[in-house]
Image (cartoon, rainbow, N blue to C red; front, side, top):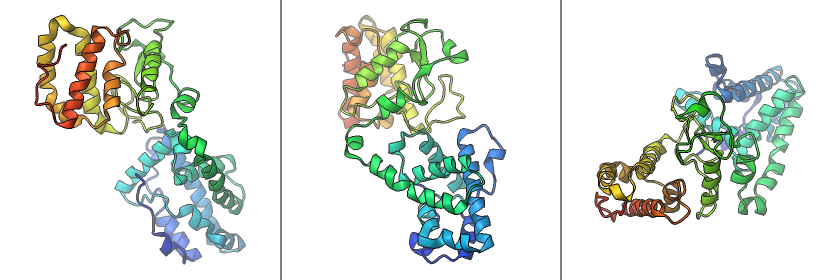
Length: 353
C-alpha cells in the first residue's frame, strides 16, 4: 500500500517557483535528519542522499534564474514530486521509512514506479553529487519509460523472477551462515541434523533464519509444486523481496515487518516440533497440546491452504517418502484447512498422529 502523497496533482500544476520552494521545504524535508541518530540503518542512507538532491533543487529554485525556470518547464518537478510520499509528520515519516525499505529489498521490476524513481534519483545523486541539477531532473523524468516497458513486459509478468533470479542469484540470496548465526543450537531446526561442511551446511535466508542447505533446497522444491510457486521462509513466512526488520532481537534472526504473521508462524513451528517429538505411538500428548493451540491458530491463519500445507508437509525428516511423518503432517494440514473454513470445532482428537 502506497503512503499518502504530498499534495493532489491538480493543485501542483499551477505551482510557481515560490510555491515549489515552500512545498519542498515543508512537505518533502527530513526535519529530524534520522540518519544522524542511527547512521547504521541501511535505508537511512537513501533518505540522506535524496535530501541532498532536494537541497540542490531548492537552491536552484532560490536563484530564480533560467535554471529554475527550466526545472518547471514541461512539468519536470511535477513528474518527480507528484505521488511521492510526504513525511511532514511523525506517523507519515514512519510509513515512509517502511516504503523505502520495501523498495530497497524488492526485485526491481516489482517496485512501484515511484519507488523506482526514488532509487534512480538516489543512485544519480550519489554518482554526480555536484552535477547539473537541471540535467539530473531531466534524467530522472526520463528513467520511468524504459523501466515500465521492461517491468510490464509480458514475459516479466507471466514468469515471476523473484525466487530463481533475484533471491538465489543476487545480493538477496541464501548465503552461508557465519559467526554466531551458525551456532544456533548446533543443528538444523528443520531436520535436526547437526550442521556440517556438506549438505547440512548452515545457510541463512534473506529474512535471517538459519537452516541447512538441504532443507533450503527441499523447501524451494516443495514450494514450486504449490499453486503460487512462491518460496516462503518455513519459520516467518517472509517472501523474498519483502521488507525485513533491522532491529529485531529474535534468536532466529531478523523477522519481517509484517509482524502480524508471527503468531501463525510460531504456532506452525511448534506443530512441526511436536510432530518430531511425538510420533504416531505417542499421539495423546500431541493432541492435547495441539488442542490448546486451537484458538491461536483460528485467529492467526491468513494464508492460503497450499502455503499452510507446505509448512507442515515439506520440511520434516522423511516427509517426501510417504512415511508416517508425512501422513501425520498432512493430517494436521487438513485440520488447519478445516479451521480456516470453520468446519473444525476446537479439538484435534480425530487427527491420527
